[in-house]
Every structure is written in structure tokens, then in C-alpha cells.
Image (cartoon, rainbow, N blue to C red; front, side, top):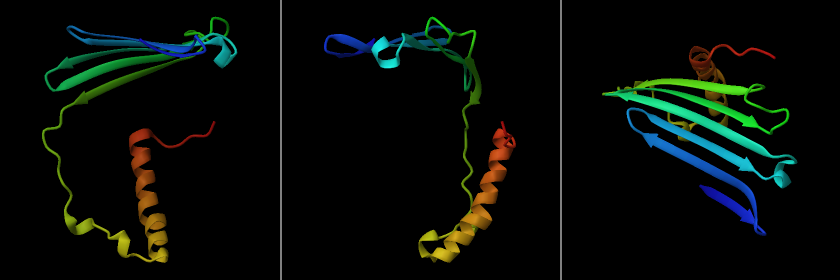
Length: 134
């Protein structure tokens, strides 16, 4: 438990409980004083992970509760992860290296606009999906 206190009044309190048995469970709640937010507010994180040799799976739930309009029923963010240990990382060859310290401003501009930006956008689309408007 961590408490931030000013003038003998708790501004916020962080409660963290973590257990490790067959799986790992970690729950955190952060309680904000009504003076800070205008109404009592608590942020929650509930997380559990299961480890099996070099693999892990986990679920995390994030939500807030003000006791009035913001509750777990009105908004919740659920995150799921799957991971595994990598036994080897392939180091890229030196044939694709760029010495940006030796480039002029025009060369840097062309390099970032013509090469880096399109490749980064392609990587983002592959890993996170194409951007969509609201």
C-alpha cells in the first residue's frame, strides 16, 4: 500500500496485491480523494498470468468506478497476451546500414520521407491494422 498524504489528508492510495501459486494474480486499485477529482474515483487493474515452461498467457482488465456514472459496466478495457521465450535473435547484416550522421539535411529529409516513413507505416499496418477514422 502506498499513500500520498498532504495536510493529514490522503490524496490517493494505491493498494497492490500480488500472489504467485500455480499462476500469478496481480490486482491494483488506486483510490483518489474527492478533492482531487471532484468525486471519489477508483481505478482498478486486475491481472492474471499463467506460465508454462517458456510460454506465458495473461489477461488484464482495466476499469474505473466513481460510484455514480463511471463503473465497470460503462467502460472496461480487456487485454490478452500470449508470449514465449525467443531462443535466438537474428542480427541483420550490415548491407542495409545507413550512416545518418554523414547525411546532409536534404538527404536526411529524403531518407525519412521516402524510406523510413513508408516502411514504418507498412510495419504499423501489419502489426496493428490499417488506421480507421472515428
